[in-house]
Image (cartoon, rainbow, N blue to C red; front, side):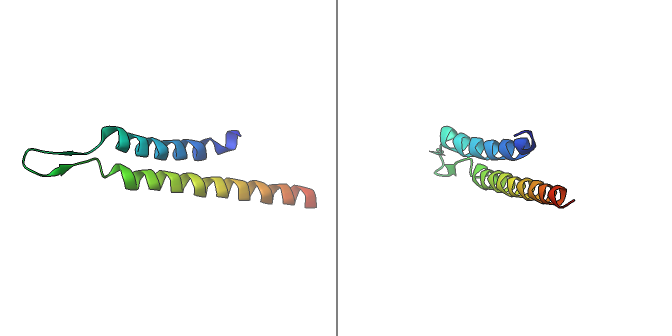
Length: 72
């Protein structure tokens, strides 16, 4: 479990970005422009993607190490 801390943390930050986007919300300013924290959406996807990829890499590396220990 300790080896997946980076993956879990990255995914949690991604989910927090989506939660923050929903909590902050959108509003229309007096001059008619829309004000919303749109930057949180791609950052959230990026962190979730990093979390998934790093979990896959850690799992793959540990499976390869296990296989090489059994073969030796």
